[in-house]
Every structure is written in C-alpha cells, then in structure tokens.
Image 1 (cartoon, rainbow, N blue to C red):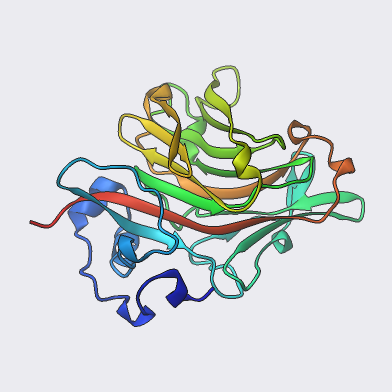
Image 2 (image 1 turned 45 degrees about the horizontal axis):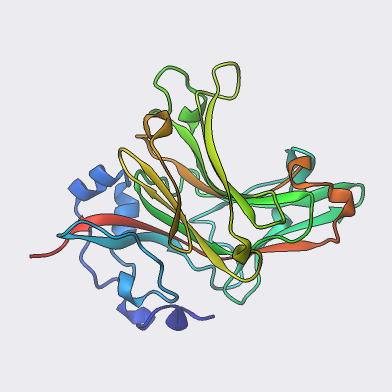
Length: 285
C-alpha cells in the first residue's frame, strides 16, 4: 500500500500545514521537534481507513500529531527503537523478528530458533512520548498458543511509589493472551514490588479473531476510555490517571499466560497496519 492510497491526497501536500504553536506543544506534552513534525501530517479526513474517533465537545476537533503507516521496506528508526537481542520472559526478543513486509504492515514474528523461542518488540522511547490524546493501533490477532501481542505505554515513573499512577502508569491498551475472543486491558502503577497496584478488565469480542481491528485509548487528564473498533470496552480513573508523557510499545511476549509455546505451529506473524496518535484542538473560528 502506497502513501497516496493511505490518504486522499498526494504526498506533495505534506509540509504545507502551519506549524503548531509552542503553547499547544506544552499543553499536549509534545517536544518542539514532535510538534513541528505534526504540522506536516495529513488532515484527519484524508486518512484511509478512517479511525472511529471519539465524539468531542462543540468547538473541538481531532488532529493527527504522529503516526506510522509502516510503508516501505524498513522500520523507521527515527520513530522506533527495535528491541533485542536479550532474554524476555520465556523467550528472547531479537531484532530480526520485527520488520516490514513491504505491503504496508509491521510484522512481529514468533519463531523457534535452535533451542530457544524468539519474538520481536519496538518502542518509541526517546523518540515520541505523548501526554494525553487518542491512540489507536490497527492489527490482527495471533492464532497460535504460547505468545501474546500487546499495544501498550510505559515510562520510567511506573516504578516510582508515592503519587499513585499520576507520576507514571503502565497502560496496557490491549493484550491478546487468549484464543477464544477474550481481550484484556490493564493498568499498573507504583512499581512491581510490594507497593504494586493494578486495575484491569477482560471482555469477549469473538469478531477480533479474524482480520484487522482497531484498538484505541482516549487518554484524558482525568479518565481513560478504551475501545475496540470504536466500541467502548472500559472507562476508568484508576490510579488517579497518569499526568506524565509515556512512550508506545508494540511487543509479542512468550509465556504460559498464553498457553504452551511448545504446541504452537511456528512461525507466527502478528501484523500491524498502523499506529496513529491524535490530539484535541480548538476549531478555527
């Protein structure tokens, strides 16, 4: 899929939108470089396929501030860090298991390599770390046991204790450990030791087992609202709601939560069509 088929405009349009103001950058938790980059992004109405964006109050609009449609032949390392090679749970994260298929998808592969099981992971750490907004990933669902795909957010404040989740929360927008149509979304804060706190939900949507679906989070200053294909699945203010920037992670974990990896028919590919991040702005008068 080429850039022009993604958007209802030619790529020569890019760069013609006015640069976002520094004030907006501060309020949204974006660095000046990210804010300037967002000025060159296509308008929301041109994105294909369109996202099921949440309804906004009168006088407000959604604006795309960051995205990756995974076009081309190589992962854009100005946007993503590719993880590996190191031990992770019951397997290993290796760089070769995160790649583009040349058809507009990121592939995170799970495979057996010698006597070990490997998978991939990428993150926007140090490259793009938003605070608030609507984040959405369009992807498939793994079919083999022993691994789970996840679209989530993280930051160094997650391990701090004392201000609940306001100074950092692990936000698991979507995790896929099951193979029966169940999904789970979770929040973790105050570290992972004796002070650890957690809130989460598990729900069933069998339709997600086939094809591509969108998994979204509207991260507000006072509330999290999760959805699948635009259908709200969880609304919570647990942890007091994170108030600091977090980075995005796309990972496949190998572990018994998802079943026995030894029974899986490998390799297994998790396909991600895109990740997009929107922020709320005032409409022009």
